Image 1 (cartoon, helix red, strand yellow):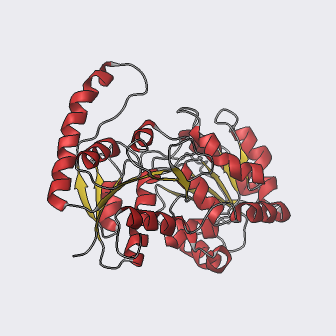
Image 2 (cartoon, rainbow, N blue to C red):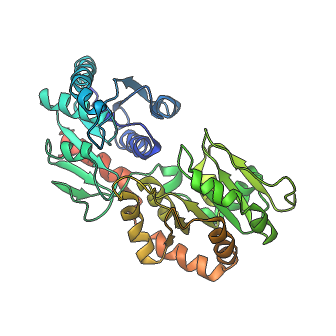
Length: 366
């Protein structure tokens, strides 16, 4: 009988991307493994998991409010229902091991797995763990983290799993093809702007309002606005310097290969991917939350592979005054690329997959 693995996680690309990378690595190590993903109906997993060829089961989401509110009073009932639903999935699929990546789905998955005595693996994506995985780390000794020094019980540093199409990317070799497919000129300095799967209003506004200055400086832009947001551009931009706006980039390998510099948020997945491929970056952490995005970016910034700019400081004036000069400074960009390239493990997907197999006591992986 083949090994059965349940991978729980969803909501955003920060959870679904490492989940899919780990699934691919498990399948590479153990071709007959049966993999099922567990998510909720409100997350990105409803599209990306089936598209990647994996089975998806859904349970009700259980948001955990950060502050006391009426929603907090509803959590116990919602959690009870979600744990029951997760348990029904476990009883039907009978997995040998459960691995969680965070998000609304993981608390019920962790509790249901614990009640059934199933081996549990927890992967924390951020440098500062959230409440879901702080709970998960109390239920198992199989805990993997993306950044050294993450304050989590039983933590083993594996890095953040990244899909092979990115972690094995040869940017220079793919650059000409990537720029051609994305509608970019072959030899112009290229800025990549993206704010995650939902976009980032501050990035969209500040760069959009600077479009004329960037184009006048000979800088072309590939700008992913987010599916629900737009970028306002002046109507008279010169056509000889492309400014390409798309709602979403489903081939990040092409985007990374095309770019000389990224302007982006600092989610764990983003930080890991740009460092992994050696793409210099300007990180603009989210201004809310518990400060995990600034912590995520700190190792790359400290090593010289990126810059850190606060959300308030990312103004159109900052963009116009800083980015054209940086994009024309080939020596500085090369130094930043070299500083970033060796900071993160490129085989984190395999490391985590091996931990999952050991937790399941799979033959040959004890």
